Length: 220
Image (cartoon, rainbow, N blue to C red; front, top):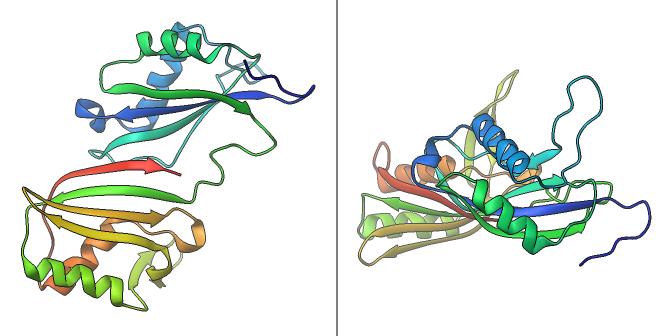
């Protein structure tokens, strides 16, 4: 089992899937479900101090409602080290169907959360549309030096160039139309899937694209 230098805190990095009916679970309800599962599994999670102590659990970027995730991330601060295999078995038995444990690893907590420096997310988006017009729209986005979108902030509407955050984009049209992308999560180059879909619709000459299924495949 992992041993840590004196004074360093351990944490458990959990990868889990959020699929099926659980894609309609809000982020707040997800946090509550994970908290209940951790308590029932009797994992050695650390608790905050004060009159209302709570388990120290943090998550990766929230998923939009109705979107599935295959490798979502959760970090549990631990009060002590415990065998990962035992924690995996205990937690798997307590998670509801649709919240499925993919992996659990113990690491050094450090001063910053292990989830603080996530850089990118992978996406698979199944579309109802297909054809060469859509393929040309994808190629147009990849060839562009600048991709301008507008974003509403608290004080104004601003134009933002999202091209630096579009890391990968591909279109597969075999038995279904599947848009595969890797988008930046960094604040300075953040890209949202809906922004890519809107730009594709504009280049395809339609008002919007019809999404049949949207999945976040990984966070890294």
